[in-house]
Length: 318
Image: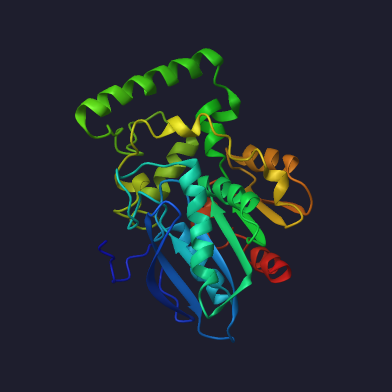
């Protein structure tokens, strides 16, 4: 692993926190890379937060912004690259797994809980976009997680298996699985997975939410990062396979009695993911809808991300 030591984030470095690169391993032996942010003020041991997402992003983007901001507010935070992406290890590159990516959050909790600066009984997690769903799944299975926030959440298993607004028909699903299954023979013959086209290369006529994604990931003034799949690369063609048969929010009610906070933009195309997750979850739970915010506004718009709300939530529950 070759970790970049220069500051290469899409946001400015804070003078209120200390930052260092770290590595840790998950249960599958994959080494993950992270950015550890520690408050300069306050007294250890601190409450801690593990942060990841969005799906196809890297720790130098939205998750790092959330992590650094929460460190400024008194938490030790760890923004990490999921397995197979960014500076984390794992081969082949640019593949995702609902199981392994859920495990990545628990591995981050492992790491945080061994730090002398952290109170291991006060660890929470934040998942953004597709990793909001992973965070909820991790909180359900890992009882060490005392509180969870999912911001602008996607359930990737739901959208890959059923399409947006659950519009995929049984015939369309069967056809997609037929194609993906046969792609495995091509990949096996070639000894390597096939990759899709470069993400978010717009040609005109795309839905508005896709344009909003491109506005974030492709703009060097906003969210572009060369290691991000959504900025500069593509997923393996067969990445959807495991997502299409493993619904990750089946046990969301088992997060209770630990609290969850769901945050979504009023104008987000993805708002229904948080609304249905909220309905399925048990108390204590809260859903915050941010007025006039789109899905990607909650990636980096500091006037729209409700950091005061997130801070109070973790202060009260960790």
